[in-house]
Length: 181
Image (tube, rainbow, N blue to C red; front, side):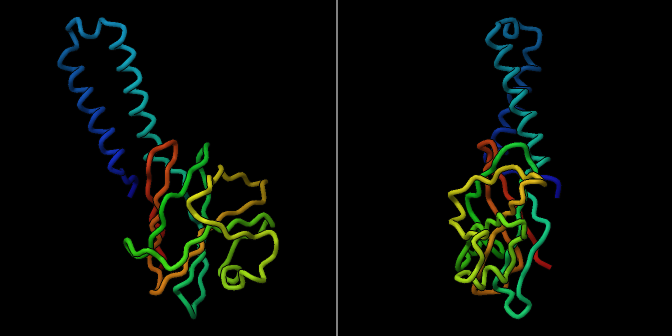
């Protein structure tokens, strides 16, 4: 699946298409000779191209997941921001819309990728790993030399098969589904 449009993205796309159809019908009229119309068309075209680019090149990536084989109800999925600006996580659900028992943003500043062992031993964990509320943080672009890693720690009553993350990037809502095999 190359891209997943949100409702807002779908409305922006339909508005841009409707605007383009109107322009094609009126291409030879005085309508386009007005300077305000040229500026409006340029802004609409740039917005459409920008949103299309963002929809195809979504910034949220997750390359590793750790879980306890004895307890598949706990999972820590690393998240990386491959974009050029920060994004904010809005909602995390599991298994197609189920609200998990607990969700936390796991931040590691010790150059170690967060794992399930850190999640299970939260009281004993080192100072370089923090567990924070998921909705309050902006995830900056990932740089290889920062030594900072982010993850999403999830605990659920049932085994976790998919993690559905809803986030905003440049104010546009996007969704990422992380599958657990």
